[in-house]
Length: 346
Image (tube, rainbow, N blue to C red):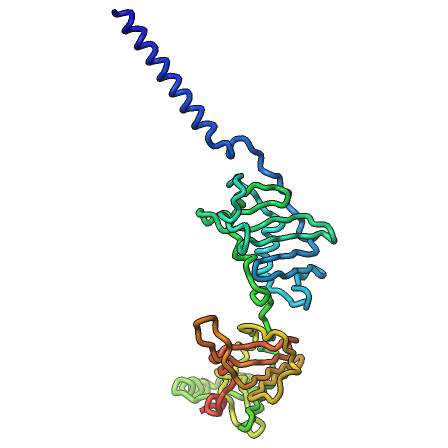
């Protein structure tokens, strides 16, 4: 009887050991994707050799072309915002795969198919040196799902970068429409349609010495002590803006205007229009420095809003420093259109 019990216990132990071993093997090999695969090796690409990057999205496509170290948007050769383009070029040249995500070929699950995937092709001359599809950002927010050309698997790529590629052409354009050094400007001319026109010139104005009791005591003491008077000091001056008839301008407001024009960025460009399409400005700003600068402001209109939203009033403008007409918000544009009480010193 005891022998039977012992044998039974031994069998149970053996069965238990086998079950535990099977469970261990299952746990080890259940993540087959993470054990039996080798990540594709993506070598870094020197950005200098990249000549073209094609980006195809469900809502359109555009091409970035490297010309003399500057990235432009084809086919019209629009200059780009370097800070936004760097997010694209950095990802293309340093794309790093960190882990296998799936072998199921269920690409829609990762926004890699249909109306959500973004395809990227990077060229050296006419040769494709890197091609991949961009899916959604991984739950970690530190990775992006990608698929490499010629490979059916889906991988985690380092960093969250989909938003760098999921942009419209207008988002990538350089929006600087005027840049100048305010210290070089010597003349400001403001012309309002049907209103007053003002021409201000930078002028040096003598600073009047204010007699104070302390100054008088010092001079009297020098006289009593028979101290030889020092050579008269150089007359002090201050820089002002003045009209031809001697009216002094409001320096704070005029300097503020120059500050705004020193690095002026537009809200957006007006597509399919040229500066020649705009006539009869309602306000004109002209500056004279090492060269002449001009800003024309035209009658505002209401832009089209998104579906279900109202439009916003904006002004179209043309700058001598940009070949493209552009829009500014009502608030921004009207800061340039100074009234008489804002221009003259009170």
